[in-house]
Amino acid sequence: MTTATKFPLSRLRRDQRHWRLFAAVIVVSLMSTGTYLGVYAASSRQVDFTVNSKERICSSDSSGTTDCKYLIFTSAGVFENTDSFMALKNNSSDLYNQLRAGERYEANVIGWRIPILSEYPNITSVTKEG
Image (tube, rainbow, N blue to C red; front, side):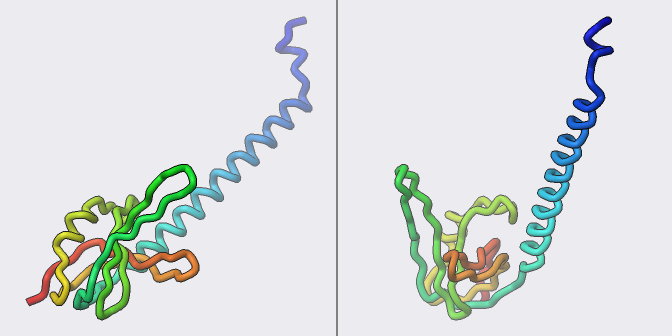
């Protein structure tokens, strides 16, 4: 008798259950991610504002990793200016350099203000008015 014929049927059923569970976890993960991305994209809107001030905020963790973001204080609230994979944005430094205090702009923003997480809507593009 070969080892292939001794393969227990109960093990095959157990392996099939594991694969089904694994597939279910993957499907739920993909659906959750897709839902989040859809809701995030749906939060996109245009905002007109005057820049009051701007600053770069940095924080470090215990391993020495530093994370920085630009905050833009405006007549329409506070906005974040960071690179975003989900918004396909990688020009935050250039955009930050364009903004001048006292000037009026029209901007596309995405996201929400979530105080408990210190999150702000992210500016994805900006054009100067006037």
